[in-house]
Every structure is written in structure tokens, then in C-alpha cells.
Image (cartoon, rainbow, N blue to C red):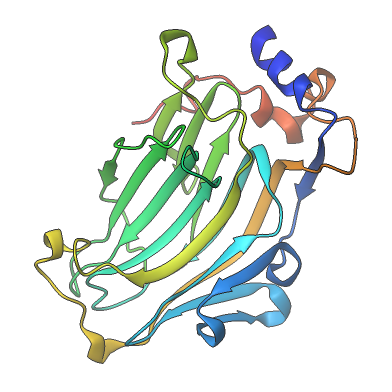
Length: 256
């Protein structure tokens, strides 16, 4: 733990602590592409991303994060969603970027979605893992979470951990700990590969396809080059709302 706390201390002069108890899409996010296909509704409480017959849409967080516990409730495209891809991920920029991916691959009506995950460190990915989940991703909203601290990255679905990537820098494996990342989401057409390796094409007559997002919550280290606030201090670790900072791998974070 001493080593991880030292890493956090190095960034304390450049970050501030933010606890987002109730996210608002107007305040917390920018629409990055798709124009009117991305719609902020219900006074900022709901965001709908549309993929029509020609183009998709996406958004990103206004803030950059260095470690955090991020939650988002998402409801996926219902019915025939073949080759639609809805993404929810953290990423930095550049050729040596870090990235934590959750991509939802649509399917023919009645067939299950696939949750495609990947983790990039210093521009290197090829760590794909895919999952069939235990519920209908399109009927109601479900919570998808990313926990990123100095010890590991964990992906959760409705509070259940499905994947863990440990910090193994001591063995020469890069770990995301020195590049800030924004949160991104999008919907787009991946008919070259998303459903059965591209064998099933998008049913464009079913467009527009809609993925909906709500209840963003972010307990996170927010990067700030202007505010030299004390942040991620060791004496914050004992506070319940900051427990993710020092959380270690135990029965609550072991994947089934």
C-alpha cells in the first residue's frame, strides 16, 4: 500500500477530489459527434444516442480523471440490433494511450448481446475478453461500473465484478497510472465485425437505433492544472466514500 499511496501523492498538487452524487449530462458531458442524433432529455438526467441509417453519435466527459469509481446506467438497443455497437469506456489520447473498454455488440432479435471488453496500456491492447450476461440488456437500465485505482482495474455489472486487471508493473507489464482519461460513450455501425464476425449485416430498416444513459456517478480524481487542491491523501482512505482508492483484491472484487 505504501507504493500506491506514494503514486497518489505525486499527483496531489494537480488534482482535486470530486464526488458526483447525481450526474447531469448538461453539466458533466459534451456531445462530440452526431449532432441532433445525441439528445439530452429530462433536464439533463437522460441522454439518448441514436444511430440512423447513415451515422451514429457520441459524447465525452468534460473532466479528465486519474483514478476513480465510475457508474453509469445504460439501456441497450432493443429488437434487431445486429452490428450496432454501443460503447462505454475510459481513454486517454495519443499513440501510447491507455483505455478501458466496455463495448456492447448487438445481435439478431432474440439473440443475446455480447459484452466485449479490452484494456490498453501505453497503446498496447490485445487483451479482449467477451461475456454473455445473465439478463436482457434492453428491457430496463442496468448499472455498468469501472473501478480504477493504483492496484487494479475492475469492471462491474450491477455490482458484480466480471473482469479484473491487476497492476503487475513489478513484472514488466504496463499499468494505467500516469495518463488522465476521459469517459466516452457512443453508438455506431460495426457491420464489418460486430455480429457473427460481420456475417450478419445491419437491418437498416429498423433504424433509428437508440441507446439510453442515465444516473452517472463519479467518485474520481479530477485532473486540474489550475487548482492545487490537496487530493487523494492517505488520510482520505479511511472515509467510506473514498474506499475505492485503497480497495484491494478480495472476495468483493474476485470475478466469478
